[in-house]
Length: 312
Image (tube, rainbow, N blue to C red; front, top):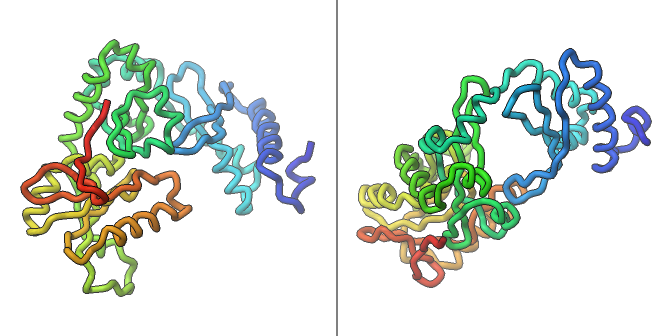
């Protein structure tokens, strides 16, 4: 087997890299002052299947997941495998992760229900994930439920509610989504002019429509904000304009001032250009654009005027 030193003049393939990394990880584990449980697992993350390294401390219910793909990118950029392996154990020894009582909390409906939130993802890109996760189809998107966790020990994070957890709670899918959508009302929307995100000294066209970025002020995925049509309607009334609603990623959407001269082809071309950017492939949410007219709280497809609805 090739070693890191033997291949310093030759870049390892991803499979070769994993072999070398795995050997170094196990060797370094033997030298640690404490013992960890280490296992590998293929993990669905957004629309991709990644090679995870799960490292669990004794007696802990929460275990961080490190990804070979992340370490391989670092390796390509000149970071040694030894340095990446050290990074794993430095993290484990420095951070005191939650114990079994933390896991008990999320396994009890009474404890978890007030921490449920909605996340919107692209249904087709996440079809494998959705096989084992309660969801609601919303056009070409799917709404799933997560437990939003804020802990002094690990900071903010989320846990996806899957069929197994739903079974443990012994509640219906309807009750799950009713509670999660109710919880979303406590988060305040953030609607900011797109121009405020432009780099300094970059000139922007002054004759185009006003465009706004829609998301939440809280540290959660922002796309579900498009479902809060009541708040968006209040913004539309304030600006005295109907709005095109473009879900550009799982993090945010764009609100575009309605104009008669903005064609359907322009809107879908704009969204297609955003979705085709390889840098944001894991964040692609939808291939549709919607219209919200003042006085009507329903989102309608720009393509054919039909109403966007939620399906079980």
